[in-house]
Image 1 (cartoon, rainbow, N blue to C red):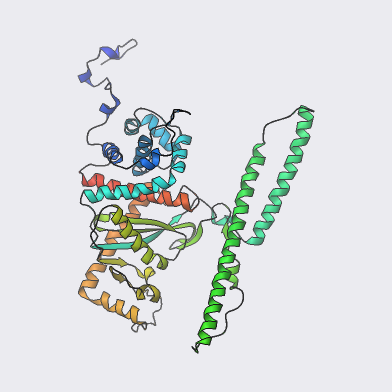
Image 2 (image 1 turned 180 degrees about the horizontal axis):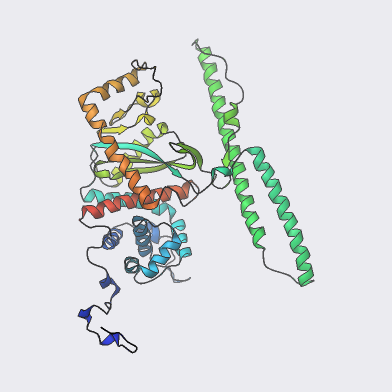
Length: 447
């Protein structure tokens, strides 16, 4: 067909496929996952979102929080976290236009919405889990616990010690003073006795850098105080052991070890930590998850320690709390975890679910004898039984694909900084993972 100049598209019959439907909702097939996301948000309790908006008619009208939440959730499911990318999708992608009712929030509005409702956003994970439970997807007879290292939005080269931060603060203050003097000279030449109102961009940037440096210095002081408190507790315990006649070693020093007294802190993201991975060291966080059957995430938390051992019992508690909020009364009967969650302290504590934690690391080839500690020996015997081996073999297929799917979808890098923001981001990543599982469970296919 020759579509020459002056061709009248309106005259073309609709069944020939040239005209778009008059309603934007007709552009999207009934089996598209966007409809399930919208239906899911309709079932959420959004009172915490709406509570922060005025209802007296004053101020500029805001976008509907339900629409904004559906947009953010769908974007995370789609592997899009950048607010600018979400804005572009709202302009050109049919599914995003349907979700936003043909509106186009700008990237600043999207970013502010996530920041403003950070606490409520984190609770979305529980509400998605409740939908999965209602669909019969949450089975917790056996759960798997594991952690993954997440690269933060900061460089490891920005780690500094206390003296280095002091030098940087002095340098930034001196640079700010020099620039302020230079600005005064330039303004005197340009305005004379008149006033110039613009704050130079360079001066504003230095003010932000100075703020971050001061926050890093405060974090170092906090870490030093915690290290000293721990050392004082060791000295008190040593004195109590001596008074009770127990055999103890030498008295702990009055000050913490040098490694505790001279920590490093990142001047870009003071909450991030150096994490050891198989590929080397990264600056970031440790993302913990408890996963049930069908790779549904039961609990998700961010921790700052690169070691997993301290997260064993807190994550089991978090899983039980999440199940209670989701209305799941089934007991967690067994939990499988790798050797990073082992150790005498963890395995000696009572636990409601039966623990199946690997006890051998294979690092010492000469250490081939049985474990010496009773709790570790009991765990080794439990894992050696046919039932123990069968259950532990399920660990890898339950939890490892969860990290692979999440990192393939949104990438191994975090987009935010600071524990509150990173925790919310991790909750949204894991909530979107569960939502995609629900979409697949309903027989829908992600395009």
